Image (cartoon, rainbow, N blue to C red):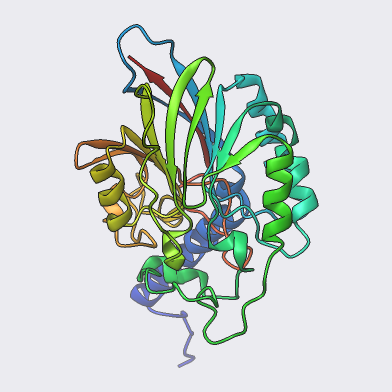
Length: 313
């Protein structure tokens, strides 16, 4: 009798089909994370009541973690579009570069926003070029321990970025550095006290407190830092900040559906590593950033964003 080969058993065929479906879904998700999500730029808007009664509202445009690489035209178009918001102040919380030759392109990206007053602090990727790392580390580990001068480069020599030239350009365009400095600035007719620190992720932070020996109190006290480490937020709260601005976390960068972060890239609980949170009663605006390291060019359920924060009475 002739035997006819009927192929794999039904159960095997079912498993094979399921495996192929999972592979296709995984490949599609990865493709979206690399090609789609990280170019889906958004503007988040928040209103925070911290000004004295009768004060004019202040509109602060918060930028963070651009991680600029030459040729990022979609990012440039989005940032240029933000000038139409006509903010009273731009707050840049660092990690502006991700390439040795990115500074001229970064200045092109920011050019329309130099029309407005600004303040800035640096992050680690304003000092050191990013090193190749496994991008999937965002799924299971924090990089809070990567604070040394090599920027967590697993023993490689640090590659220095043109930090001084970048800050000089910011200064020449009228922006104010808050690098371990306290400054009193009049913003759209409102007196604001700022306290800023150098990057807490690198442990460069030295808190200056807020401006002292002033004849009259400021309308609002604003703390500015790149990385929202708990010790940093504690100190701003103890110094009397009314609101704090930070970035660094990328909002988790690779998140679960619904945006739940798996890691925060610092010692802050991943559940509160983005958005408007409160720490010891002080509102903290944490941007999930406009970019990512060029060696980890993925975002999932966590699109890049700028934030417009309106301070009111």
